[in-house]
Image (cartoon, rainbow over all chains, first blue to last red; front, side):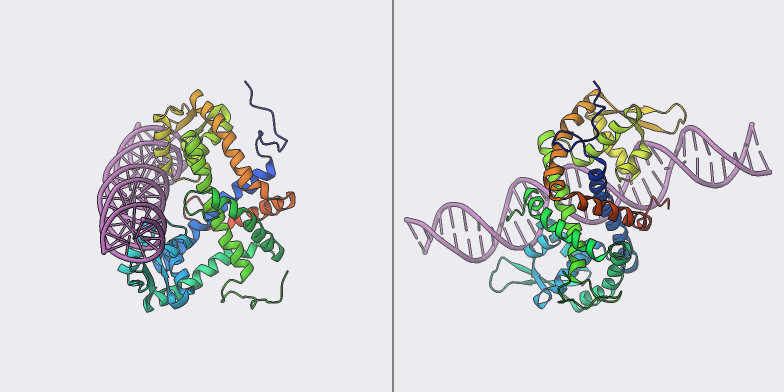
Length: 168
Length: 168
DNA sequence: ACCGCATGGTTGCACGAACAACCGCCATGC
DNA sequence: GCATGGCGGTTGTTCGTGCAACCATGCGGT
């Protein structure tokens, strides 16, 4: 049997053509390289893993610099248990505190501390610089726009097909 | 599209503007959703995690359906130790075998078994279908091209900035 | 031939994350 | 009022991965 053959064609049965492969594998590789590089940089210069940084960012952008655990989890793309542990670490490091919720006794807020705010301010600069030099600097304005629109079209379907959190 | 709302165009100091944020966060979210969805699908329908699938793909494409552990590791973006364990699992499941290297006694090949080849053939169909429906179907030809060229520009720098494997 | 030194692969260990089970609390039903 | 079901958060466990340390082998110098 020779599966050989078949380069061309887009029909569903066949392999990916060259351009498709480039777009798809590129996505995987770029994501892997970028997140690894940015995480390493952030950890090296501020002792702050990328996921922790993301938490701080979302908190800082939120009303009162606090968010419900649940919302935070879906913002940073983590499971509830994953976020619990991550918040444990951040609380231990004094970058945020847990705060009970008045209107719903089940709920808990994670709230940025001044220390967390300061840490974020420092880290933000390096991270943004990294994103710019490693990623954005290679993009023209119209490419930026293309990417954005592509993501907007892809995301709903992908998020919906992914396990959990399908509020589509 | 530069709807004058123009957030202050940013030099390196400031935050990301809206388009930049969309492009960047979109990349993260799309990757997360896609890989999670595809992994779940592959695991559900063939009991094969995505990373294992990737190994089989690269092996099948290689001369003699075998590759050196080292090359395989860098192909699937895994550390050497990570690949060792992954190959352990695949060997245990009978999808590949280790084979010693005649020309270099240190080296080891991972070689696809007929069972592995068959498993891949089955899995490939579902995976490619998934990639198409969740990702490629949303892209026009010129967008495909844009993505490819963007990745090509971004990758060298990112791969170089990432720890390990910097042959730049 | 011998000695460093680099390279390929495996192992011990630690860490981060997911899953499932659980508990306390809200919001309905009767 | 009290039951039921759903939701928010935490805990026990397991799994996959990276790092560092460790052979064993290859390679180049002297």
